[in-house]
Image: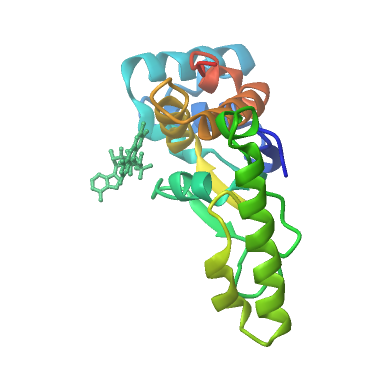
Length: 202
Ligand SMILES: Cc1cc2nc3c(=O)[nH]c(=O)nc-3n(C[C@H](O)[C@H](O)[C@H](O)COP(=O)(O)OP(=O)(O)OC[C@H]3O[C@@H](n4cnc5c(N)ncnc54)[C@H](O)[C@@H]3O)c2cc1C
């Protein structure tokens, strides 16, 4: 059973010199190549963000491997239609040993024993169904929504800002907020001028 939050984010790919690339593309509109260079590029990108000229952020993107996320949270993440996803298949992959994400309220309260019992029963029934020849795609129906999954997400910088802004507030659930925090951390490291004005509430 995994404690919460258990999400792990790995940056697989990002547009090289993303800030410079965005600035180069944006300058086409004004034919102002003369001002280029890392500092001028960052200043231009910050200005474009302040002005709300966000379409230029679509020229840069990043690909992440996201592990240790519950299927409940993956359902929330994949609602973001402008990102691209690949998710581990429960039809083809045997997920008998997949950990379960356990929310604090269940892990630290009087319900822990009941919840763990339910999860153990579900895992054990899944194993018996698969062993009895039930296809994995049908056996998976007995698994809890807290079961861990993994995804690859490719997202452009404009949509990444949108996801982090929506999912990084107190209105969003703790697990997707933790994910938003990880994404923001990785993206701010790589492209500070694009992401440094965002924050995720704890
Ligand atoms: C706190 C919170 C609670 C939520 N609760 C629920 C819930 O109870 N039930 C539920 O079903 N969902 C819920 N959602 C999900 C929410 O409704 C959205 O589906 C999800 O956040 C994706 O947001 P989006 O549509 O803005 O973004 P994306 O799909 O990431 O799209 C980005 C932006 O592109 C534009 N866009 C994309 N597609 C279109 C289109 N077809 N037409 C016009 N513009 C488009 C919009 O401007 C959109 O904001 C919740 C989300 C949050 C953050």
